[in-house]
Amino acid sequence: MTDMPEDLALLPATRRSLLHRIAVAQAEGRSPSLTAAVARGGEIVWEGSRTMMPGHGPDGDVQYRIGSITKTFTAVLVLRLRDEGLLDLGDPLEKHLPGTGVGEVTIAQLLSHMAGLGAETPGEWWERTPAELRPDLADVLGTQPFRQAPGRRHHYSNPGYTLLGSLVEAVRGRPWAEVLRAEVLEPLGLDRTSAQPEQPHAGGWAVHPWADVMMPEPAEDLGLMAAAGQLWSTTRDLARFAVFLMRGDDRVLGAESVREMRTAASPPEPGIAEAGYGLGLQLLESGGRKLAGHSGSLPGFVAGLWFGEADDVAAVVLANCTSGLPASTVAADLVRLVAEAEPRIPEPWRPFREADPVALDLVGPWYWGTTPFVLRLTADGLLELSPVSAMGRAARFRAAADGTWTGLAGYYAGESLRAVRRPDGTVGHLDLCSFVFTRQPYDPDAPVPGGVDPEGWRGIG
Image (tube, rainbow, N blue to C red):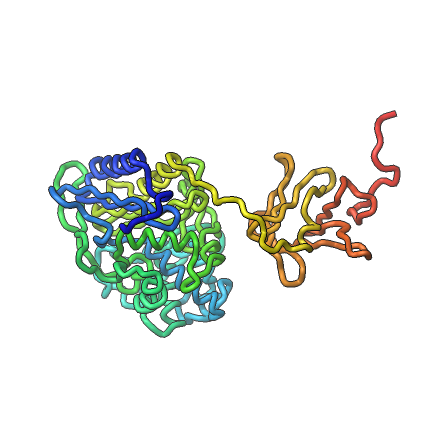
């Protein structure tokens, strides 16, 4: 690690708590080795490792297989195609990758595991057998690729991300790994992430469940399945990747697109602890915190990457055992340990440099019927609608070119907020998704749906 700003450095007690957590995980999980990293404020602020071997343990430059964290990289490539206007997420797969036999599924459904495809390939366990057994997409999908109708429910699918990798190749006209290197890894400086292992790298091991003995696992090339789980990486590279997923980078994907990736696009499968799935990112609620990231596993390796946007903390855990060590859980625990021990210090308040005078006449109290709300103009240029009491829907809106404001999330996502002005130019009321907001409850001068009793407010005689 390089020198970091003093306000980012972790306290000694926090560092010891992190070391204790990974030490317990490696000992109880009986993994030959484990390596971890934590990023805060955009910088790697802690690294740690444990190993069964005496002497120097693995550092943040040692490669491990990361399994399904690969899917997040593939999703980034697909979102780049969308942002360039080469496809739409609502497009059927057939439009860009014809002849698969499942061409009616949309790109968005594949990204969010809503396409209804099977979880695994037919035939032998693909992670431990040669890729030559699955030379074509027909071998990956099989004769009955669907488990339910597309769009009905979330069902995790490795073949679905194989299709996305093939989609990238079809649109770009180059192999998936080559596109990934040029468009994501090199711009972000992830020079220790690769499709094939590069020294130094860990070997994968299977540890006997009932005895302290182990044997090596095969490291198969995944062939067509590469986009679902092929990559090797390091804790340092993945920590930097997590920072990118929180902040965006216009050389790869902007902030809005990575925010879209970590927004729920499908509910979780029944009985799964996840809070949903975005576009290539798993979502989790842990200890009252909302996290995004991904778990990963392949024979001989387990991996976990999680970040909390509100706390600006990310953690990565990599280990070289097939099972027994819950890398994903440990990574989430590392985020929690830092966030709880050293809460994020807010940025100093700063006023607008150029407050929009049009938006200023929208702020203040408004009423939907008799329910009071407050509309605020925030420093990032958004309008924030908040109920005064616990009742009512909160929302944030971004200015549109036509003078309206567009909802960003929740109930009002994509809906339009419009200021309706009087002949003298002053704001008479707000129209939001057909709801009328007025400056006083049931303003008789506003077009309240259903009208307002002409006798107005009254008590009981």
